[in-house]
Image 1 (cartoon, rainbow, N blue to C red):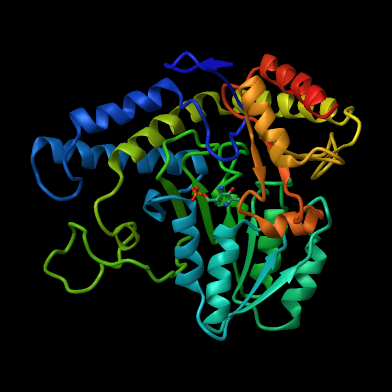
Image 2 (cartoon, rainbow, N blue to C red):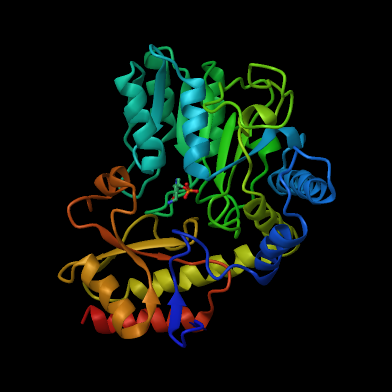
Length: 387
Ligand code: PMP
């Protein structure tokens, strides 16, 4: 439980939407960027611009270190995971290409794929089970049906919490000469990611969820040689005389003035995760498991996704046999000051897969700063709201 400056108390369990509160060093780094490094990075040569350039250089190095990227130039900063996924998908796929994708994707994947399908890309969906587990053999069979350009998957579902077997899918994609594109929005931070060994050709992370950074920043990793065409040109400081977008990374993918304060905040968060990530992840897992087991004891409540004991990210969605999801979320907020999210969570495919597209669900997102007391309060409140 936290107290806002207004005096209002809040138990924040909406980390899957965005992490809150941000760690103090993140806030300090944003303020530092705006006060002491407020120039435009990569443009002018005065002290404030150089400070901003240095800040971004160091941020890129730290993000690369956290995610196991050997060459930091393969990391590009994005306005978010959605922007990075659009770049990876639209930058790699052309009319006539084929994509194989799982059935729990967020609309940051399903909408760009819908747009690409209208432009002549064939999109084939492999149905997961109702807990969101994809069967690698089913992906392999689908990939064998026709020439495939890319397999696209989530690292973890923002509704079901299910973790996908990314390494197996990478092997399947690569054996068929296809790329593996991974939506890491719910993975990075909550899961330890090593991109040097994971096998993803493109991995996109959200800066503001498990990575604990500010909103409006994300990370796009493209493996060496993966030649995604940039979606935006210009606005950058390198090779001013040249009419075409630079081809060198990361400049190719970072058109325009970057979100320097956001990147500074993300870098501070990444340093925190490098120091304390294992402990943070262990506590998230302990708390989500406790929440899971206790919610299962409430009559009429169904918990979506894998059962307790099976691995998941700290996301837990529930539906009640009688009390509607939006009613539950409203009462948790109004009566108990508990922040959760009801509805379809931008992921109608995942809800169709779970059989909850008609009613939606209530999602609890556990993350950094959540306490056992928060979980106990949430369980007690759920018992009362669902009674
Ligand atoms: N993919 C998934 C699985 C997500 O949960 C989200 C965030 N809701 C996104 C993509 C989009 O991330 P961002 O907010 O950084 O654009």
